[in-house]
Amino acid sequence: MNRDELLEKLHTFEWNDFECKKASREVPEDAYKTVSAFANTAGGWLVFGVQERNRRLEIAGVEEVDRIQNNFLSTLRSGQKLNRIIQVQEKKYEIEGKHLLAFYIPESPRNEKPIYLKGDPRQSYIRRGAGDEQCTQSELERFLRDASLLRYDSEPASEIPVDSFFDENTVRWYQAQFFRRNPEHDEIEDPIEFLLNWNYIIEQDKHMLPTRAGVLLFGKGRYVRQLLPRPVLDYQRIDTSFEQWSPEERWHDRYVFEENIFQTWRGLVARYMRIAEHPFSLDPDTFRRIDDPPDYIAFREAAINLLVHQDYGDHSRKASIKLFTDRTIFWNPGDAFATEAELLDPTEKELRNPSIIKAFRRIGLSDQAGTGIRAIYRNWHELGRVPPKIHNDKARKQFELILFKKPLITEKMLQFQHSLGVTLSAEQAEVMALAVEQKRITLTDIRGLVGGNFREAKAAADYLVHQQLLEMLDDTLFKLPDDLINRYDNLTPAAVQAGSKTLKVTTEVTTEVTPEVTAVGTKLGPSWDQVGTKLGLSLDQMKLLTNFEGPHSITELMEWVGRTNRTKFREEILNPLLETRLVEMTIPDKPRSSKQKYRLTEKGRELQAQLSHGDDQK
Image 1: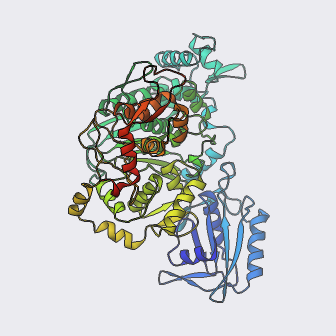
Image 2: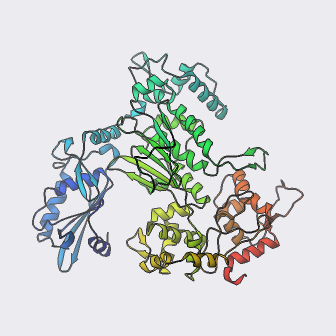
C-alpha cells in the first residue's frame, strides 16, 4: 500500500481488510484482536495514528513511532501474546506532518489456524465487515477441522459395518464408469475388494473399516444419514428473478438429496436436463448427435465443485443450488483454501476432501490440475454472459458461486461503447462492459473475463486508464468515471434503438443478426449467439475473422484462440464459419487431407473489413 492508496482508504471507511487505531503513545490491547481476525480471515492492513470522529477517519499521528513499532512487532514475533508467530509487513508514512504506521497482517496457512490470544482457542477472532468478532463454538470447530493433518474424509467410520454399508447399484455403476475410462486396470468385480483397493475401505488393527469418503460416496441411505445428519444438497427451482424473490415465497420444484454423493450427482443431472435447453448438432468426425445444453459445462463443474469441496463435518449447514430465472446460485458450507485469484490458476489446489475428489477424477467427472473454475468462466464467456461471481467468505467459512443469465453486451451497451469514439479490442470492450455493469472491477475480475494471466489483464486495464475510460484506485482496483456512468444511465431507449440499426451483421443463414459484443468506435465484435439455425459470432470466431491474412492450418487457428480440443473447436468455432461460407477449405474435395488449410471467402473478407472499419463500411 503506497501513500496515495492509504489516502484513498482514509477517505472511505474501515472495512474487512482495513482497520485503524489511534495508538498515539501505546499499542492498544484490541489491536491484537484485529491481528487474530485478519490472520484467521483473508488478511488486511492495520494502521496506527488514525482515529474515528463523527464517523470519519482523521489523522492523529503516532507520537513515539520507534517505540510503538518495535513493541508491536516484537510482540507479534515472540509467540507470547498470540499462539503463532505473525510475520507482518510494516510501513511508515508522514502525512500532514504527522507519522502513521501501517502493518499488513497476512492470512495464516490453513494448518496454523485459528490464531488466538492468551493461549485460549476461545479467544479466536474473525473479520466481518469493519468489526472483529469472537468465534462461536461452531466456527472454532470448523477451523480445527480444516487444520487437521488427517483429512476428514479419509478417517474411518468405525461405527458403520463394512460388509453391508455400500449400495450395490452405486458401486456397480461406478465400476462400469471406472473400467470404461481406465481399461488398463484389472477388473475387480467384488465390491468390497474394489473399495479396499482404492482405500474407501481400510485395514486397521486387523479389522476392515469403511472410510467416511466410502460411506458418503457409495453408502446406503441410512448409513449416509447416520454419518451426515443433514442433507447432502438442497435443490430448489424458483421461477422468478432473484430480486423479486423473498425467502417466504414457495419454490416451484424442490428436492432434498439425502442419498450418497454419486446418487445425488445422478439425480441432480436428471433434474437439470429436464429444464435445460437442448440444441441439436452432429459431431463432424463421428456423426454422433451432440445435444449437451450450451451451459452444461459450467453447471457440471459448479455442481461437482459443490459436492466434492463442501465441509461434510459441518452438520449445521447444508449445501444448496437455487435456480432463479436470471441466475443460479451454488452455496457451500466450507470456504476454498485458495484465494479467488488463485482459483483462476491452472494449478493443483489444497483440498478439503482429497479422497472424494479422487473418486470423481477417476471417472472423468472432476477437473484436473485445478481447471474447474476456469472451465466455468470459459463456458460463460463463450455464451456472452456477465461473468460468474465468487464469494469465498473465509470468516463464515462458506463459498458461493453465482452464474448470471444476463448478456454482457446488450444493445444499450453496444450503443454506449459506439458513442465513445475510442478503438478497443474485443477483450478491452468486454472489460469496459464489465466496468459499466459493476462500477468497480479488480484485476481478478478482468482475468476471469478475458481468461488471461495477470500481465494480460493489467495491460487491458492500463489501456482503458490511458484512454480515460477507467480510473485507477490502486494497483488492482479500477472504477468507471462518474461522467461515463451518467452517460450510460442517460441513454434513452429511442437512442439505443436508432443506434442499433447501424450495427447489424448480415449472413446468408439469417436475414439479420444483431452482434452482442462490440469493440468501441470503428471496430465491431459480435459475441456468442447460438450456433445452429441462429448464427452469431463468438469472440473466438471474431478473433479468427479479424486475424485471417492467408491460408492457415487448423492447428494455427486453434492456437489463436487458445483451444486444445480439436473436435470442440470444429463444432463450436470452425464449422459454423464454413457453413455460413465465411471461411472455406483450400482442398474442399479432400476435407480430411493432412495438408488442409482454411482461408476467408469473399464474403468473409467483406465481413472482416466491416469488423475492422465499422463506420466506414455501410
